[in-house]
Length: 170
Image 1: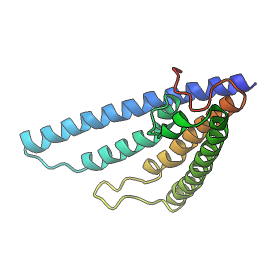
Image 2: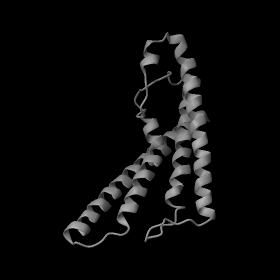
Image 3: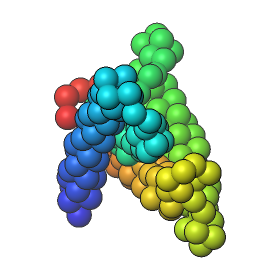
Image 4: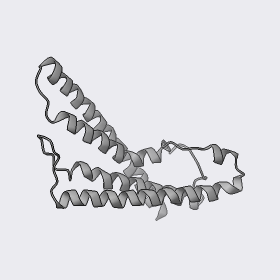
């Protein structure tokens, strides 16, 4: 059952990575379109800047779990490199649990923020008046996926299927 959870988590993180990549691609294409409209056609742009900002922030949040899967987050591995091997697992447990606690808090507050925007039907203060329940959904989705990946990584380490501070291929 644990293997099924781990495989599901890895697959969902990969899907999130693909979605994040497409969001970045769409943001780049919208930026190109905005430049064309603004500087070649000499027309005004109304929705492009806001959309690009929401897409890039959303891609960043939704891509968190994929980057964790690849071990692409910034880490300081000086201490694990120089400490005795018997201290690596306790250090990894402390850092993993700290990460899980912090991301859980971010998930809870992100969900609350999204829910308030959804419940009160908030819109952006721009001409397009984007319903903020859509861009704010990236908060609980992104942090929820990231939390899921952190838990899966923690379980892999605790069961001995992965070494502490492992940066191996996935």
